[in-house]
Length: 151
Image (cartoon, rainbow, N blue to C red; front, side, top):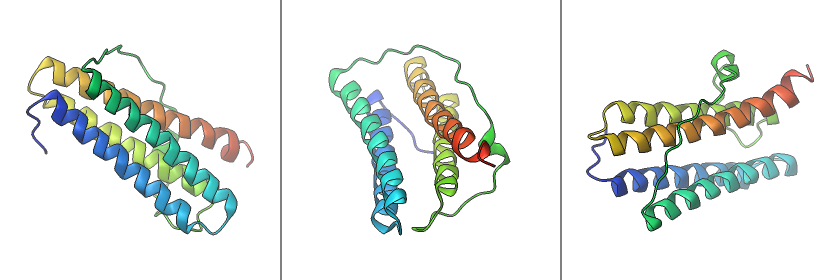
């Protein structure tokens, strides 16, 4: 696991992770077989761009307010099979991929919080984990509304 020496190290790591997500979703959008899927993947990429901008702003302003919140977990992704991303995925499959990515990011930040060198670093990792949990919830709600309810 990566060692962080400063808050800036943490934020740089998180910013790079958000950029990786932007690149991932843009790549899927570029290779999408249908216009609908291209729009979905582009939308996911735009969300990640917003997250990256927020983290960059936090880094530049040097202020980070942690407001602990309990984020609901519908646990939908716990019961779905892993989906390998492909350009011709269905909307349901794309949501499963997105939930999986957000869940993995949550676990990463949560695990990093447990090993943080000080309380400030721990609080930042917890806040980042909460943010990823919110993203996962957004995709779970979407899956519930547009996949589960249609079946």
